Image (cartoon, rainbow, N blue to C red; front, side):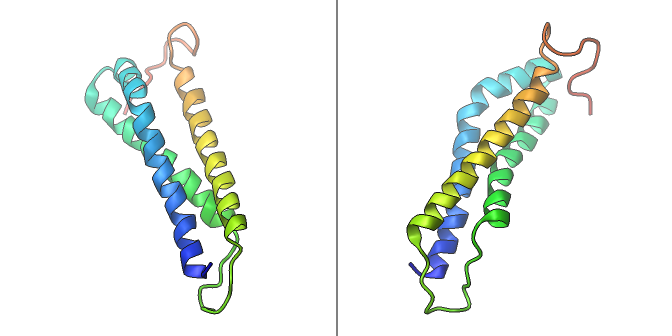
Length: 123
């Protein structure tokens, strides 16, 4: 596999999985955000922040920790299996990290579970 194709794979996997996960979570999470924040404008802001986190964290892990591919050498060959596997592992770690962070943060403001008396979505 050429280095350019490998780099495209490293970019596409997290850039596709993050929005898919955000779309999957939006229904339940947005309703909860509206309830916690009090209005749709605040909930929309926090939903957008969450979406950026769900896309950005996997991407930065792949770009920061993935194998460096030498795209300046067109004749170099990249092990496709290794690149795809590593990209999937780093993307999954980023997704799980982002979801865990969001769940922990939202849990703090759920009545009966989190801290009481704090405004949950004050801007």
